[in-house]
Amino acid sequence: MKILSLALALLISTACLGQFKKKGNNTLPKQRPTQQNKFLEKQWWLGFKAGTNLAQAKPIKSYTVMVPTNYSEQLNAKSYDSFLKTGSQATLEATFYYKGFSFSVQPTYRHTRFTYFNQYRWYNNDNSAETLELRYDQEQKLDFADFPFFIKYDILRDKLRPYVQVGIVYSMLINANKAVTISGTDYASGGTNQFANETIIVGAKDLFENYWSLAAGVGLDYNLGNVRVVLEGTYIKGMSNITNTKNRFGNDRLAGIGDAQDDLDLNNIVISAGVLFPMRFLSSSFKTLDR
Image (cartoon, rainbow, N blue to C red; front, side):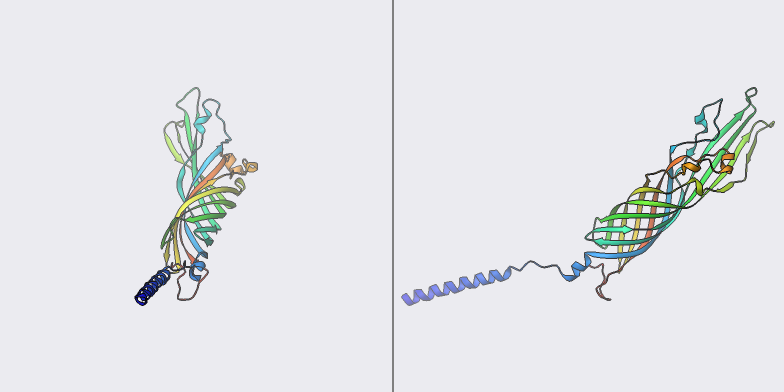
C-alpha cells in the first residue's frame, strides 16, 4: 500500500513539472528590433520638384508721385490683384528622415508675378465735360533664389504618406521687371476717344530687395519601388518689406508716368510635384521603402 501511494505521488509530481515546463516554453522573449528596422528608421533623400505659384502683394504703406488738389486722393489708390497671375519654380531637395520626422533644405529658383492698377482724372473746372481719364495697369515680374528650411512630419507611414510641414525661407532677389500699360478715355477733344499706349517695360531690380518668410503646408508622398513621388502645397507668408525704400523714386521712366513703389509684403501659394531618391540601401534586392 505504501509502495502504491509513493508511486502515485511520484506520477503526480512528474505531471506537474511537465506542465510547468510546457507553460514556460510558451512565454517567448520580447522581440528585439531587427537590423532592417533600425536601418529604415533613418534615410537621406535627394530629388527634384517643379510647379507653379500664385502671388499676393499686400501694401504696407502706399506712395504716389501725383496728388490731386480738387478731389479725394483715395480715388487714385492702387488696387492690387491677389493670387491671380501664375509664376513658376524649380527646386532641388535634400531631406534627412528620422522616425517620422524630416529635416529638409530646398534651394529654389522662383519666378513670381503680381499686378495692380490705379486711375487718374483731369477735368476743366469751368467745363466739366472736358475730362481726361487715365488707367495705369502694372505687372511686376520678380525672380528670386529661395533658401527654405522645412521640418516635416509623416501623419501615416505606409506606401501612401500624407505629411505636414513648417519652415522658414530666405529669398534673394535675382532680377525684376515692370510692365506699365496706360489706357484711357479723352472727353476733351470734341468727342469720346478711347486709347491705349504701347506697354512700357523697364528693369526694376533696384526697386526691390531680399526678404524672409514663414511657411506652412501639406503634402503627399507615394512610394513607388525605391522612388518617392511627391505632391505638395505650401503657403509662404512674407515677413519683411520687399521694396528697396532708398530707390523708391529712383527710376526716372516710372516717376515720369506717376508711379512710385509701395512698401509691400509678398505672399505666395506654391504647388509642386516631383520625385525623391533614397541614398541608403541594404542590398540591390531590398527596397528601402518596404516595412
